[in-house]
Picture (tube, rainbow, N blue to C red):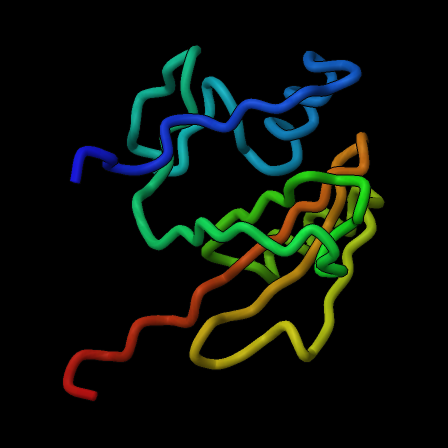
Length: 132
């Protein structure tokens, strides 16, 4: 199969520079960011760490995210509680629901960027310990 993974995500913004700054500041996402602290930053790309990614169209009338939005971002995270603590400290509103979490799928929280785009934060379940 010729497709290897996502190469980018492009979307419209009322203030692209301010929104890019918000993502870099609060989530470490965007050009010049690296997920692996030993990696060298590149001014043009966000260097991510590979792992599972869901690619799933939703029905047009889904209520899983706002009806006036065509997409919702989902970021895979390694320390959801730590990230949420940091976001709370900055005043960013966080939504959690017990029904979103499942031991086989992981834990979830939701925030919104300054332009109202939903961002789902997903901490996958820890892999089973060796020998289990």
